[in-house]
Length: 231
Image 1: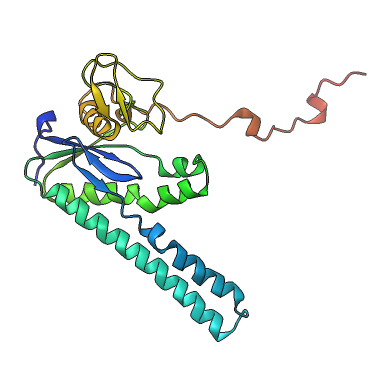
Image 2: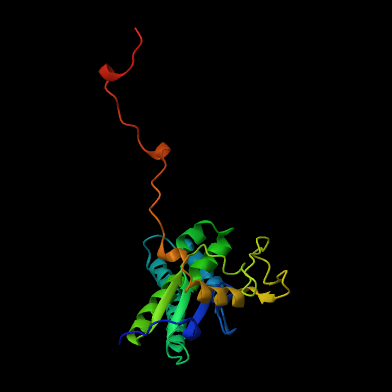
C-alpha cells in the first residue's frame, strides 16, 4: 500500500538507548532485556572449558558445540524481542509514521569507553531494529523518517529551543533556563519527531564524502632526471 503523507501529529518519535532500549515521544519506555549480559557468565565458563580441552579431541568439539549453542540462544532471544517490539509499533493505529535517528553503531563501538560499553552497544542491535521497523512499516503502508546522527535531540529544549551544551551522559534529567524540566530520553524522542519535519534535517544532506588525508597517500615517485638536483 502507498503510505500517506507524513504529519507530525501522526508521527511517533523513537529514541534508542542502552539502559532503556526504546523511549517514544508519548513517554512510553521499553527496558533493555540485555540478552548477552544474562548469559555472559555461562558463555565465559563454556569458552574456558574449550581452552582446557586438547586440540583435535572429541571433548574439545563437544565444548565448542556448547559455546555455539549459547551464542545461538542469545541471537534467537534478541531476534524474538526485536520482532515483537517492531510488530507492536507498526500495528499501532494511532501512528502512520515513525521518526528515528541515524546511528553509526560501528563508530560508537570503536569510540566506546571500555569493552563493557562496546559489548553493550553491540548487544542492543540498533541496526537490526531499524531494518525490521523499515520493512514492516513498508508492508503496512507506513513511513519511516530518519534524522541526522548529529542533531542535538537530547540537548534542545522543546519549549524555548535553547541548546544545553553542558549536558553530560550521566545527566538523565535536566531543567532549562525557561523553567521546563526534561527527561532526557523522552525529550530526545520528541525532538527526533520534530527534527524529522525541519528543513535543516542533516540526514537529508550528508554533503560530499571527505577524502582521505593526503598524509596517508603514498607519494608518487619522481624520476631522477626530473628532480631538482644541485650540481
